[in-house]
Length: 394
Image: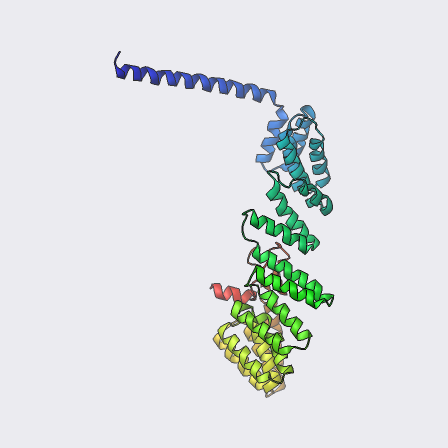
């Protein structure tokens, strides 16, 4: 028999073996399918039809008929948690953990799910205790992420720093921004309690963790100003412009007040105008207009607002211009009344434009936050109002 005939026989044999294996697998699949309760398939159908309530009812029936279905217990627990039925989810996962025959990998899985249940229910102490038990396991990294979330909620900043540093060392990505902000939170607590040396130490640690952290510079300036060291405060606040120029709008009021206390108001105003030219912003414009009105009068302030309106047209800039314009002497009472109507109408429309918006989740707020109240991410609020961001995008 030549080589070609052997080759053909080998192909035919391989095909036959594959056909037999497929038949065996199919027969096993059919046998396993017949052993499953009908409610199992009903539950799957309800899930695919996006009817979770009816799916849960069907799966509960399966669990009653066959208590050994571990994966179904996990699925039910997750469904309960998503629906907000945390007590039922907790009971489901606790029942799994009480099973003496539960394999180790499934036990760890159940423990992790139980921690999520506690976290969802707001039982932070129990969630922390549960996630601590997972340290060093296959769920250790995910458990640490949730521990970090818990410590942020509880404002346990020192523990948050430890967990964030551990996650970073484990290669999960940089946490320097978070760590620096945690140090700033510690500093703020110390400032509120008049422990200024502790605050300075924490802010030094914040800058060591993240040199681009402008919040620490602002706080250092605040401490210096509180100690009547206005020159040092100005030096610290000036560094904000060097580190991250758009954030100068957050220190404008502080800076001009410090210059004024030193008797150098004109020098401070000149500096703010240069910042406004380089980094136009409504917040900085408001500061410059206020300082100009105080130092040079309403007409000079109105001219600043007018020039900025022409350079960076926006409704917020127009509102600022009309505000100073209304303080000037107008020819008639009718003119003043017309201007008031326009101001009130414009104010109504600019309320929604004058908010800060999180770049991560889109949460809008009237004041600036270092940590978004919506998604809890840090440094996701640009120091720009909504209208300014939309103008930049367009």
